[in-house]
Amino acid sequence: GIPRVIHQTWKTEQVPPPCVPFQQSLLNLHPAPQWEYQLHTDRDNHQLIAQEYPWFLPFYEAYPHHIQRVDAARYFWLYHVGGVYADLDMQCLSPLDGLIEQATGVVVGEEGELHHNGTQRIGNAVIFSPPGHPFWKRVFEALMKLFVLSDPDKSQSVFLTTGPSFLHEVYSRWPHDVTVMPAHAFYPRAWTKNPDLKLVNKRQCPRSWMCHHWLGSWRQAPKHYRLVCGLSGRMRA
Image (cartoon, rainbow, N blue to C red):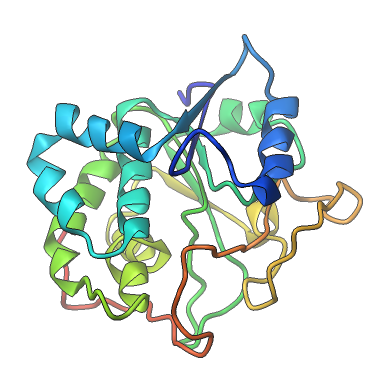
């Protein structure tokens, strides 16, 4: 099963002020000792890879974008420990106990808004997983194979090599024991709208467990860049 462990990551132990209310929403609804909360710093992420998965360390250290290391680290934490990973801009609206008690395997959610090529992409801002799930081995293989697409000058390469488009592609090729929740479960707000720091309430999102606020603090690219989803022919995971 999925252990009651919540994983989040940030550069240091000091979470950025805009994200503190979102972090607190998770803590309030998932108190200790029933739940364990782990905030992994950049140092923690590097240590996990270096000590437990040294075969991936050359790829991890060579990523040109910091967010690629953050993306990769969440997958390794879910494989290593299991539990629930949530981005810092993910607000929790309902306790997750009932969801993980019913879930089998990996759980992700649709992002909701169709992308430019008509695809309904799954997100990687919140993921549930038991430890050691075989899906992550497919993800690890794909991380190494698609590393060559990493481009230091194009942030869109992040989506292809470690981010949501990457995860969607792995899922499309290996969907076994992976549950995809409808968009209203975790992503009731459209990703095409401007980021919003205002907390939502259960009345606004009655069918939602969580709400992603799409802060996108890692992005430095112009707003007009295209999100590329298809990787057909480039991966044989």
